[in-house]
Length: 168
Image (tube, rainbow, N blue to C red):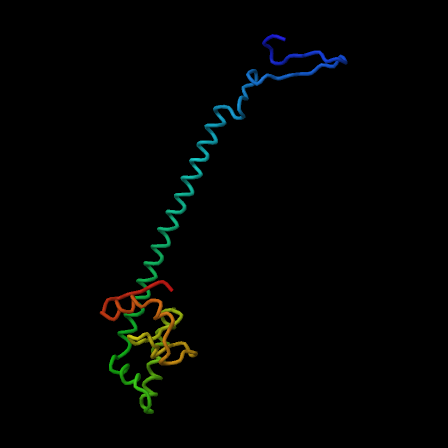
């Protein structure tokens, strides 16, 4: 047969069989060195791109959450300038007809602020986490808000006078 690209061997019935030798074609073990290098570099590139996408997503999420927190703190600061603290005390005491009018005026002012700022809801809560004034018509005054229970640490920080916000 020799060192040619193929060898022909005789078969019993006069047929010929072509046999290719792997050392003649250069396909030992599957891929050649070029193929292995290509697969290695592509795998490394895909892994790096995946890691970069994860880092970019985390950075973008962090930036957006910080921006949202700043915006919500600005809305809260605007609400404190729009509402007279002495009226809040009067509105929170239940009973008198004048108190109901004061409460109605405060709720109307909160609703105007909600519409002007584009937030979904504005409410005032006490230190126990009970809702006192709310722009949601279905809210029951004096009932504990689930958000207050979940974000107790942020409420404690806000009670000290520092702005605080948390993701919903």
